Image (cartoon, rainbow, N blue to C red; front, side):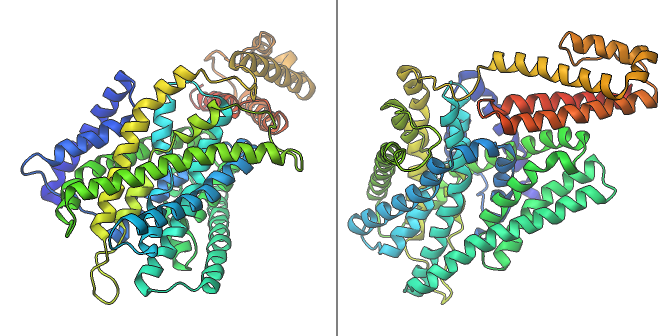
Length: 524
């Protein structure tokens, strides 16, 4: 391990440089990282990167899922819950089933169980790839919310299919009654464990004498504890991390200080930056080892199988996107839907074209054991790994490189789901300043008359500004200002719940500004 440390260090440097290059040329960085990994793998003398299959999920998935749960808007997730649920569960299952039947029909030696195993691996689209691409183009807020919500939940559904398929391959049988009970426990147990562990850690943050450093360390440990605890009771570790992460994300202002929140964001962004980079680089680096393990199948045939499965995935997702729109338009006559307007043919096609595969698919494929419990070699393991690699590579190159062009060419419509950014910013700034000024005058009228610093604050709020001079403050004035900042924070959180047309990202920016204002008091 130690002799390869310079190599691993150089990989981190390569990841940083490649992502900088990707941002410069406006290409999604997963595409460059996969190609770079593939190129590096052919350099003579490069050490082979090998991770224990049993540890691949534990190392990468918990922190990546947890960070995604903290970043997503619960308001948007609930608003578009039906379409998100359809893509995250129904579409994933139909995709896995389609792959299973096609693989069983066209790939020699593939049973239905192996087909479902492959389907569970390649069915979930990758959020990182889509997010990296959408950074360079503008899409309607609803599409961004659907993609984020889908990517958060589809990992759980696909890995449940993967787990049941593994059992069927290992035992040679599949008992529906036992599967139904096990499936129910995976859902209920996973969510319950996640919420319970999240509640325990929330109390630890709130009542133990922690500081920003210990808060951040606890936050890094939390997803691993959630995942391992759920897996120990044979429920879904992915659902545990997602549910626990969503719970803690919505309570963050109750148990974390402004310092912990500000520093935690930077730490988590850096951690996930490295983890995502390593995973996509590993996709390319692993190809020679995967190819060397192919037995009884030519490279040409294996590539053909990969292309076939990729075609099934792309076509199935596009058809599912149009099907979801049709179902929504029919359902509006029977139930209340988030938006019953016809989105036209453009939105479903673009939504269907965002099906790049990545981190979860690779992690699932690599986690397949080399041998079954009876000592026999796991059937078709290397072919499954190779097909997964081809699927990831083709979807990243074909869809990843063309998606920005398609979005620009199509000219996405504006549905008016959220207020325009400048209008929302102006409204929040004025109303927030007015709320703070009213609270100051109602609760601190005597101090306002006596303290020039508070008078200066009032004048600046009257001009709709939240900035204050770096003047020295007495502890009493700091206490007043902290109380006002807390009042503004609570007002913003309440405003976010009340206004469906308000983009939560703008709310979060203002919450971060308040955190920065609070942080400034430590140096005033």
